[in-house]
Image 1 (tube, one colour):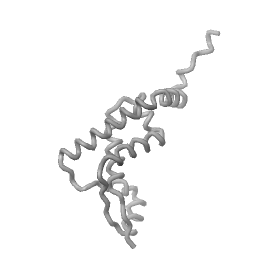
Image 2 (tube, helix red, strand yellow):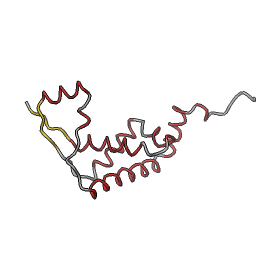
Image 3 (tube, rainbow, N blue to C red):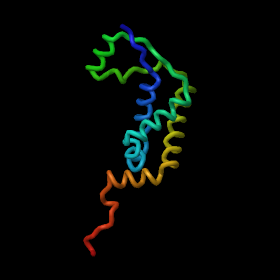
Image 4 (cartoon, helix red, strand yellow):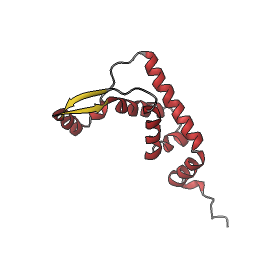
Amino acid sequence: MKTVVNLTQQSIVGEIESILNTYPSHPYQQAFAIPDLRQELINFVLNRIPSFYSIVSDEQISGEAEQGSLAYYKLPRKPLEQQLHLQNLIHQGICLIVQEKSDWISHRVCETVQPACEPSHWFG
């Protein structure tokens, strides 16, 4: 049996991780560690580029999933212009999402990651 695999999404996820690693931990990496925001960024990029698919056998999927390498499918080699376009879309998505949800991100990242954001009750 054969399965259609969306190579675009897998490639985008890898590129997003690579680009987010160049951003400061606070607030960017912490914010996009939140699954809903990460998915929103993936969707932002996916909706703006064409998708590429590949047909693979179920044996390939099960064997590679066991080895943890299914996520490493890459798109066919892209010209530099396409690669730069993808990276630009990711940067745009990061900026747009952070701007649109800055209050929510600030509250959520502060609440879950930095307990020091609350005022100290030490001094009465």
